[in-house]
Image (cartoon, rainbow, N blue to C red; front, top):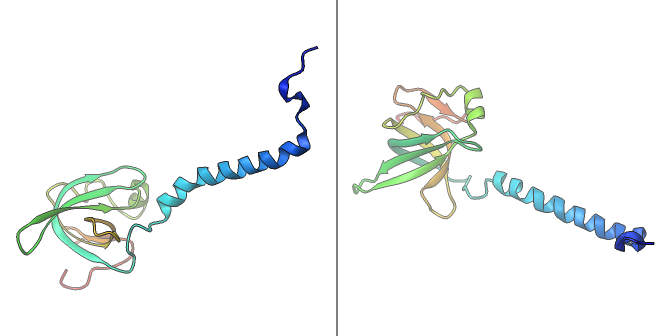
Length: 143
């Protein structure tokens, strides 16, 4: 008679091992979601004001992005990548696909990255026609 190799496995001894494997699997599966939504890369205690010309806007999930060329007083231009909410959230907050397009001059207030890269998470955006888009924050007068 043929016996499968696992036929003699003691179920009581296997339970703790299986439980540990399930826990490890759950932790590993949750790690990417936790890392993505932590927002730890951005310095939420500081803000930058970016005034420049839109190079591109990307309506992608999980976040839309604006690429904006920002000139410095010295004449050097830096391309900033500004993270927005998801396209679905932006639409629910009143954004239209045509609100921002390449060539538009924008003023963006955003949280910069902690490491100084030209990347930021938007707070508010002032469009050329004066319309304000944002997470409830307003630009100061004279923006």
